[in-house]
Structure formats: structure tokens, C-alpha cells
Length: 239
Image 1 (cartoon, rainbow, N blue to C red):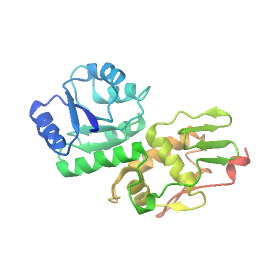
Image 2: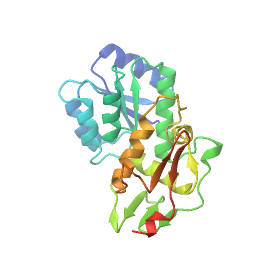
Image 3: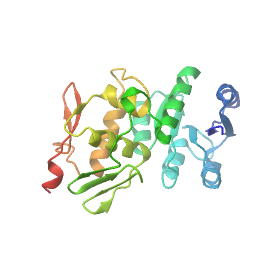
């Protein structure tokens, strides 16, 4: 069965260009021209992935992304003509899975889409992505269940996006180890760290908030300067 992509883009030339390119790699692409019809369409027939322009008539892409995250767990890739840090940060804050500038070569866009689909379907991205033998991890008041893709903290369910859950599972699966930004980006998004990409910092910050970790002095997920991030094992029992 073909993976179906809902592509929301108001520029007909660009929509046809990217749509035709993706179809040539056996994706089924459904085109929408404005944001106001997206929510109803996804509710009625959820696609494998939503490729979403930010600047749209009717309802902008950031608003659509935020509304999608109320019920849709698949990848949402934002597509924009503006290489803006603020837009990128805001996009990840409201649950976007990835953020791609329109000048990105189609082959790179294809790779990013495939990486998101692999991640969402639980398909390993490479040798380092061997399946974990555990289906659940328990750290005191934090419990993570990979089979059901749920997590709870202090007895309360955590409301995590797909990206949030995968990041938490990856960190917790390597508790006590320092994971670099490059490792996390390759594992979770299938891309290399270019030295400037801040999306992982944003994702870590968002996860800390959900885990009640002090952003000024984090004790649960620590930033190790010039090396990466460390999921601390012993603090979850101490609260």
C-alpha cells in the first residue's frame, strides 16, 4: 500500500512540482490549497504524513499544525519560504515533526519525509536503531511504555507528541549515557547535525517542561556542554 501524503500548498506550480516528484517515488499525494479544510480532511481519512505550508489562505499552517496535534499523531512537516529561527522554534513548540525550507532540494525533502515515516512506523533507521528488548521503562515516578506509546509521571499521564515520546524513549533507553545532538538527530529525524540546527534544543526544552524539570537548573535531563544530553537515573525516585 502506498504511503499517502496530504500536501497543503497554495502555490499551484510548487504543489505540482513537489507532488509529481513524490508520486514518482510511489507516494500517493493529495493536494489541498488552503488551511481551513485540512482538519476535517485529516479527521475523515488520516494520511501517513501531512506536508504543510506555513503561509496559507483561510488558516495559516502554524494554526493548522496546532489544531492537528489535538488528535493526529502522524508526522507533520512544515514547509516554508522563510528560514526563520522564530518560525522554526514556534513550529516545534506546537508539535511539528520537522521544518523544511522550500529551497531545499527535492531529494533532501524526500529523505526527510522518509525519515519521518520510518520513525512514525517504528522502522529502524540504521544499525544503531536496533529494537530495544524492553517494552517499558520505570524510573520511580516516571513510567514509559513503548508498546502502547504512553508515559506517566507522578501518576498522571503525560501528553506527548510523537516526537516528544520518541525523544523521551531514546534518552531513557540510554539513561546515564551522554547522547550527542548528532546522534539524536540521526536517530529521530534521519539527518546530520550541521552545527547550527537548534531544533533538538527546542525539543529538549519542551520535554523538560512536561517533566517539571527546572530550565535554569535541570536535574532530570542535563545539558553536558559541547557533548550533548544526559538522562539522569536517580532523581526520579527522590521526589
